[in-house]
Image 1 (cartoon, protein in one colour):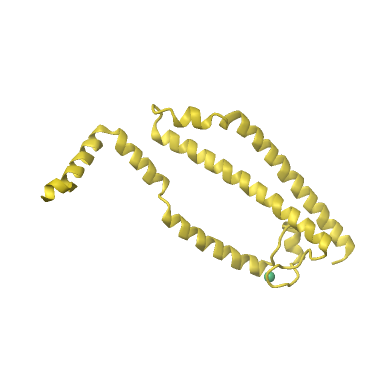
Image 2: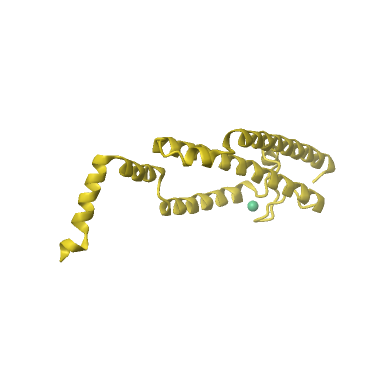
Length: 170
Ligand SMILES: [Zn+2]
């Protein structure tokens, strides 16, 4: 790759990294203000409606995921900068082909060519689907909460427990 082009991508990378780092700083600020006493205030409050707690948990999860995304971006930008030093920048880590310049323009930290990236994306999605199947959904968690709170449903649950208990079988 020509030096002039390389300087251009270096500039893009710097820019991207600064943006991300600023964002992470902003998010740290939010965390300090809003979430510091999150577990103490929200989760120990039994009076809160379970759906509200679930929504707070969702916000928290959402925020953590967002922050992780930004940090991952910074990591991959730093990685690309290291590759510049090593002289392997712009080369696909999978197949060793040159990454298309249009792709680098949009995603200067790209470590894969478009073909390999698409392939990897498909694999990631299918492995995510596998994980999702193993975890209980948010709806199921709320349902369990509702079941414990609601007296009528509790009675129904009691009936169910009696019905299924071993004494009935004897
Ligand atoms: Zn490739």
